[in-house]
Amino acid sequence: MMAASENDFFEGTEKLLEVWFASSTNEDCDLRTIDRLEWEKLLTLVKCEIISCISDDDMDAYVLSESSMFVTQKRFILKTCGRTTLLSAISPLVKLVREKCGFDKVVDIFYSRKNFSRPELQFGIHRTFENEVRHLDELFPNGAAYTLGRVNRDCWYLYTLDQEGVLMPDQTFEILMWDMCPDRMNIFSRDVCTNGPEATKLSGICDIMPGAKIDDFLFDPHGYSMNGLLPGGYYITIHVTPEPQCSYVSFESNVPTESYQDLLKKVLDVFRPGKFLMTVFANEESVARESHRQLERENTFLKKEYVCQDHQYCNFKNYNLTYMYFSRPII
Image (cartoon, rainbow, N blue to C red; front, side, top):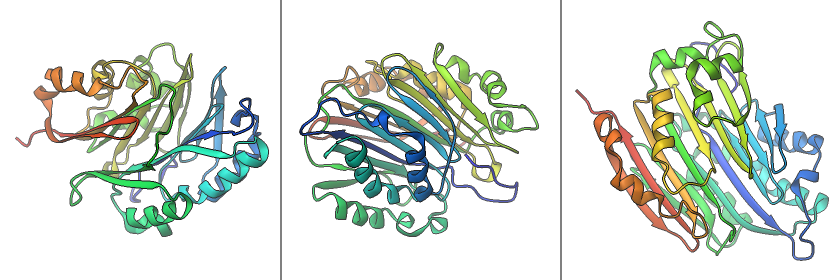
């Protein structure tokens, strides 16, 4: 979350890439055998760099100059903000994991993002989703592109493969927030906190998922990123762009649960956004596959503070996707 001067604009909205790999000959292939130097070379193509890394038995989590990267045995996640060129990494990534690990198949790919606040500032293919789709279609002949929400306002884009995909339990819960509370955003400044751990504690982020192994970083003069690891191959990641003219916060986790209501409430209590969109992506093997029904039935706390502007549900070959967009009522 590289900070900018007070008068500059920074695009907090991230580009999010998740790729699952497989080998037709070797079940023991492991992305984590790729050394850090190779990842650093790959990230130069994206226009970002590694700041720090934490690991556990299942995952390596990297805090980047622009957001985060996660590596497990078979899954690669890259989330980058600002003017990064994330899609430039896909072809080199596929080549890298084939040569270094022996993975010769892409089982599934997910590329998603909210619409940019200032798309004209992006490089090349990232200026429009149509350009991104054309680029991805050249790489994957069975791709499928979707837009959820209002294309003339705030919306969310998704590109995935039109195939059965990942068969092990898999889920992703994401909250993208903007029009942020200034008092909460001030915490993520060197004027208020001296480092990442102080901002994590003062903001209440440390209480969202107690027990997580946390790697956090406070940029100078402002901006914040954190990754958290939990046993079983689960992660949490939060990124904050606090500048008043372009305030934005993202929260993401793959923790499995039948209902994300409590987690949603914790995140909203910490950040108090004026607007947010939420997505729940879960396959048929996940305990979260019916979580959208819980959100429909038990969102009393949301109704007290927010108006649901859009609510869409999609059923793919092996995944269910829920999209909801909320804003505070105009008084």
